Image 1 (cartoon, rainbow, N blue to C red):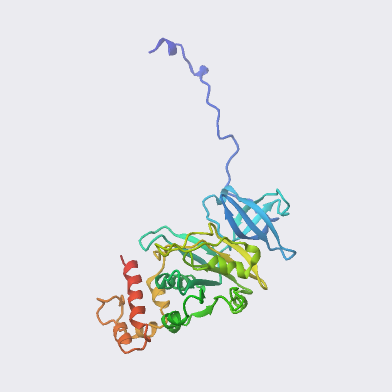
Image 2: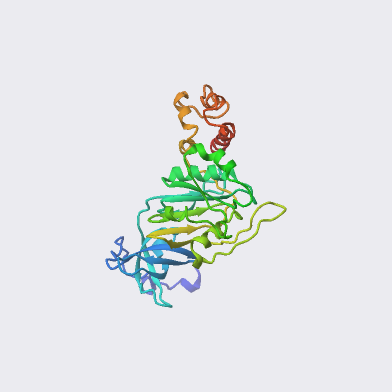
Length: 338
C-alpha cells in the first residue's frame, strides 16, 4: 500500500458534494394558468414573432422557446402558449411554454427517400400553389407533388397562375382542368399591376400558404396582395431557367377579413417520403374513378397486372392530358415505392 494512504481511516473520508443539488426532481410541470394564446408569424434564428389572439386588439410579441420545447420545431401558423412580458412593447420578450394541438400540418422531405420531414406551416386551410405560364416554365411535377401533400394533410389546394402576359393560360387549364382544382389567373392587368381581385376573396377567413418555385412571381404576388409586405423580388437566370431565392424565411401576414397568408421561400424540390401512396392517387382526381376497376392491391404502376388506368386513359376518359397525367402519377408512385 502506498505510504500516502497507509494511515487512512473511514473517519478521514469526505464525500463529494452533490453537484446536482439536494432538491428532488419532479415530473409535474407548471400549469401556466396565466398564459395567453398566440400564433407564430415568423421564425428568425431562435427568436419568434407571434400575434396574440386574446379577443382584444391583436398585438405582436417577440418570444423564445422554453427549455421544455427545445426539441420542438415551431413554424408559422402554430398556436402557442405565451407567458412573461406579452405586452408587445419594444424590447419586451415573452416565453413560449406550450404548443397547442395542430389541425393540419403541411410538410415535405428533401426527396422521396429522405425520412426527415420538414414542416412548412401548421393549421393551414388552403395551399396556394403559384406557377408561371413561362419564365420559368410550369413545373407540372411540383404542382402534382404539392397537390398530393395537400390532400394528405387535409388542406384544400388552389392553383394561382402568374405571368399571363408571357403565355396564355390554356396549357395549364388543359393539364389540370380535369382535376377539380380551382385555377385562378393572377397576371398583369391593363394598368400593369398584378391582378388579385379573384384571389383576394379566397384568402379571407382562412390561413393560406403560398408555395412555388423560385422566380414564378410569388413575392410579386404577395406584394400586390399586401404592399406592406415589401418582399424582395428577383429575376430568372437566363442559363438555368431557374429563379433565385428572394424570400429567405416564411412569413405570415394578415389579409382581408380575418385571413392570413404565409409566404414561403421558393422550393427546388418537394419530396413526398411521408405521404401515403393512396393520398398521391387521390390527388389525381381525373384518374381516381378508374381505380375502382383495379384488382385488390394494385400498385397502379406500369407493370401492375390488371391495372385499369391504361384503358381509362386510352379511351380518352381523362382528357387530352391523360397520358401525361398517368405518367406523372406513376413517377410519383415509383419514387415512393423505392
